[in-house]
Image (cartoon, rainbow, N blue to C red; front, side, top):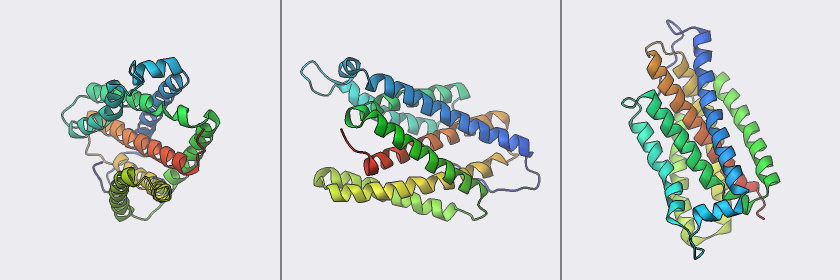
Length: 238
């Protein structure tokens, strides 16, 4: 996300800034709702899940891999096309991402009970809300902290790939623990960046709308990753 410095003098009004932040959270909650509904619907319909993700012989279908990896391509397209794409195109990509991610998350219903998923979601929401308030209200500049978190995230990704071959439960626990720390911290960092962005007067209406969508997209991804990290750390598999 592009970073902006907070400059109270000559900034937009408080109401305008709050309107921007409201738009950010509207996009975020819309994406979470779409993903949640899609994942619940497919995850609780075994025949539908089998028809989507399994072949006639019982193997994993090509469509499963399309669903699994397409969101990555969409996220790159959104980031690269922020200035070039229209708000309509970005919104369509945003919705497509939420649907595809919801489809891939549906497999969680095979591994965890609905009660476990619900409890973890509430825990994620509580942690997210607390850190968002902290990031919004703190006077400390979190830029260096955010940079450190992204470096740690890169290390976690590498460690996760390595553990795919090691298959160490202890190493997986450590990765999950570090991931919870990373994504919890990123909530505060991203919220501060969004607050700073909201007070910029240099953006026209269309660009503000695009940035609100992209900021909501980033918070949505952070929420989902925090949820998955907590689930791996605390959830009891069926």
